[in-house]
Image (cartoon, rainbow, N blue to C red):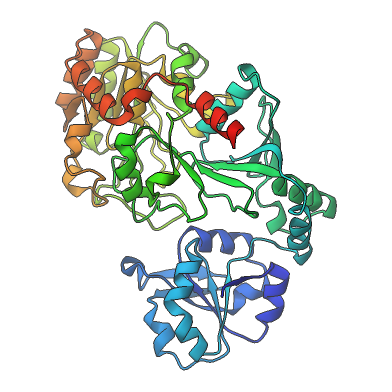
Length: 493
């Protein structure tokens, strides 16, 4: 079976032994970032992954460079008494794949460490003997968490039941102006003050429900319910290989029964785990209609927002398209200046909000006074989330981002940039993606100018098509408040 050690214990048992890491994705990157100074990292000599596309790539591990290879290396090796450290959320499946080879090599197998101190795991086990409380933990931090914010807003402003205690797991920073407590999500994974470790274990072990949108939270006791809220509605792009959810998930928010098979295929979530509830953050989109003025001076201009999906994922080797430029439609020399002049002529402002996980840092030429690049940090600095500014826009420009499915609820025009559709190597979650893109399809600057003119003149030929797509996705749930429905469900369990 797979054991899990603290960093202290791993340092001890790995002395004089080689460590082979199986899994070269987010868990490995996270571990190497947290523990680059720890002795066990210097004993890592091999990196293994089942993804053939990254075999042969070099990764820095401590003070050395290590090449990524396939799982065959375990079977072919004659090395005995090594340690296999599974750095993946799929550690149980990986163990089943290689357990016979491990026995032949007399190798120990461990999952990546969750605790720095052995004491922390003992404290967690102790507090798990006490009853869970009416307490919610949300994964927050640098990743957007609009669903969590929408639920917190509902609990603090509209909910009439007995009060929930709400905790955000953050990247070490407190969430300003939120009625929540904050915990550094990596506190017990680093050297820390004993009293803070105790507080963390007490709060985490006592929470009845753990909710996340992006990175899964670890459930540490059977009584806890792990809920996947999804950072979006449905995926237009194919994500089955990268967004499969852990078996430990108890429930997942799915917008309607019509999407059940898509969620099962793309997120590996069987229908019995799916809660047919609207994304809570859609209510935020509908409630806030005037927040854009807090971000940029409008001066009477009509606002169009451009929300591209990422092409390369920050902090990983993932690349979804052969075209990696976010603004590829503006590649010809002078395109930015031409676009800015068109926007000035139409009295329009184009706000470009890059995906928060896009690896490439794009820039706007200084000469453009009608194009504004808006970053996630700027939004956070104004104590805003993306959905609070969408209501004050006149139209959306996107490509293959799932944000379009939520924007449809505003009943405003959508423009899809499809010039790199053939080069989009990730592929799509549905057989005919164009059937899920109810809006103007644009492949060059001239067609984009035509769309801007249509928005200026209030021309919208896709209302009926948007309504058809919304019925396909949301069904009868389209008018419900997702936060209210989710809390009603949690109250019952």
